[in-house]
Length: 125
Image (cartoon, rainbow, N blue to C red; front, side):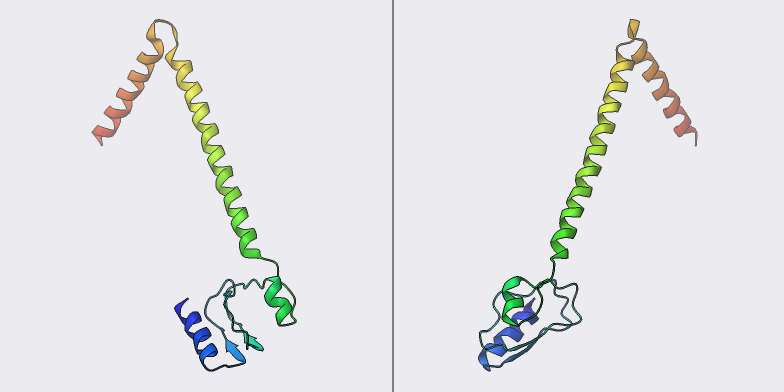
């Protein structure tokens, strides 16, 4: 981002009408574009969102903000995975309760035996 600001600063100082922001990996254009600017080059960046203000200023078509859309999709996917984990935890909790409340502490003894068998099988290896 430092390179972008340096190029904008140079453009302002030189009162230039051309600004080249090509190949800087930008996802969106900075807000502080010089007023003197008439030509803007911004090829070879990541997908670049052009907001309405900039599109109108340079007589180009406004683009959809796919970066924002991708963020929303990622957040929904994270939420979906979190809900899945919560459902699993709930099922696990119900399973433990089912075992725990067997008559005569049978569930605890069953868990103890399973645990001992697992421990004994892992220590032999």
